[in-house]
Image 1 (tube, rainbow, N blue to C red):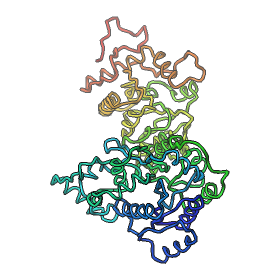
Image 2: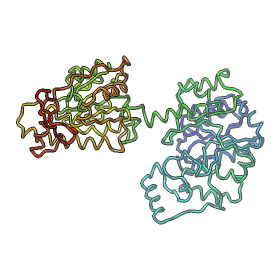
Image 3: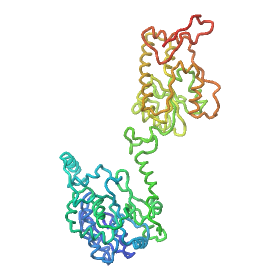
Image 4: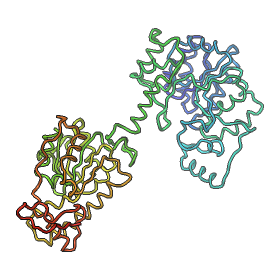
Length: 559
């Protein structure tokens, strides 16, 4: 047992092993003060088959952990000649099954070594970018205590092309630190004539406790089961998962003999597995894969989060988020310009919540004129424009279960257009050029209208480039105003069907369209003033005139 903290729990587990007839050799980290060590040793003095090996300073990623394992193993082999298998564990390990189950299991496999041992190209779990290099480079500095020196020395070696050779041409292997080796294999490693050579080499390997025994066992073992009998799980950063009281049923389902790392204050776990024989598992083949799905879900939740939910603890990099938003929503561009009371009509037909221009420059136009929406979202443009993406994603998240629809146009703040263009949850429907209808209806000087029309057309043209980009993932439909009003029912039906019309019936009535009498002439006047209105499509100058007022000559088109 390698012990460095929570010595009270280590004593409890050591007594559990000893009570089942297993000799125990304990290594206590030299960083533990002498008084604490002496008290711990005295507390176990009544157990005749418990020994304490010489102490080494153990630090993560350094040779001390291997040296501690060597010292304890040498004492185990010399003091207990009847031992057939040596099981390496830590003070935070907890037996999950009766120890006799493990004894019987190993007795049925007297020449099998249980040690995870894979070549470096086949290891998927390393974190930190050092696979082969942990063997070819040297690491004299502690990664934790001297990080700058560690990184600088790695860069220097790479720059100079320095590389170390494996001693005697051995093939490096890696795996879990927690092994169970036969006496024959372990003694062969410790008594190897070239042990000094191997030790000198691995003293400068990074994290040698994951490669020393894993590599040398391949030289001597006649039968390796490349797996650990200890259940140990790691998160996406390579840090071990800690098991708490509420993991009791999860640990029982694993059928493993031993688990780490157990929280020292998990009283329920220690009571269930050490003092309640009826609560321990029996008989099954160890199968940590039975709970891998749960850990995979935990990693996915930790790294990706819930779709469309952003939080301070895991705020993702751009493009790393698990979905831009949490639910489907619709964006309408030009519809409220072309149709009268389009928002009221859409609410009635679909039953969704239909907002006005959420990104208008004056205020946020929430549905029904509300000033505050779910999640305390204010209609303040100052708050919205501080982070437009957060505003939109918060609106969708806080109203999940209810589809949101809103209007958008070239007169709105444009910082948001890439967000919904790249969002697969977005349904974007555009009537290009419809922004000209309010200008046509306004009573303003024509010079001012021409200037504003040119500006709005430029903005919408850039916006349409975004929507037509190969990076856009939203469901996007774009009609010119001219082609839309030729047959408005068909595109409206398509949009409503995709939203999910509650009645599932064909539309019988479109929203009331604005009176476009004279609109073609308005566009011609813009063209005559030097502005080319091309986003509306082909409009006849006489479009919208009554039959009696139409001239007999063929109307010409504004292109």
